[in-house]
Length: 97
Image (tube, rainbow, N blue to C red; front, side, top):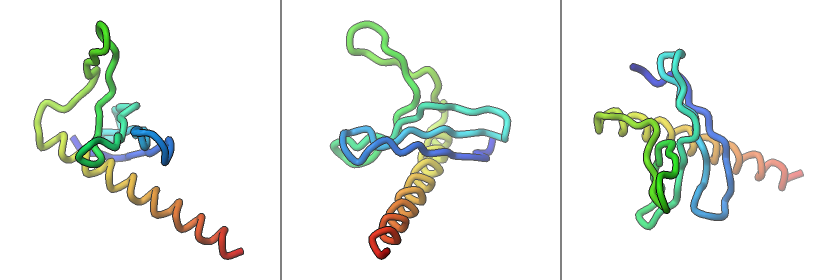
């Protein structure tokens, strides 16, 4: 299964949740609402989840193999960094005018 598309929706510079991603596999299956969160040890990816009980969350979709999790995480971070760099370049161009 190959990652064929990653879309990032930038949420905010403020708060712990930095963005939300959607990842498409083989151009046939998409997982939405993967969150990029700024935690105590830096950015991490949180799979889509739902609340169960009081304060507990359970993933509704997640990789079963650590290599797959790493592949997803790397693809999301690569696109997130590209979007951030593009945003910074756009802001720099606006400041110059």
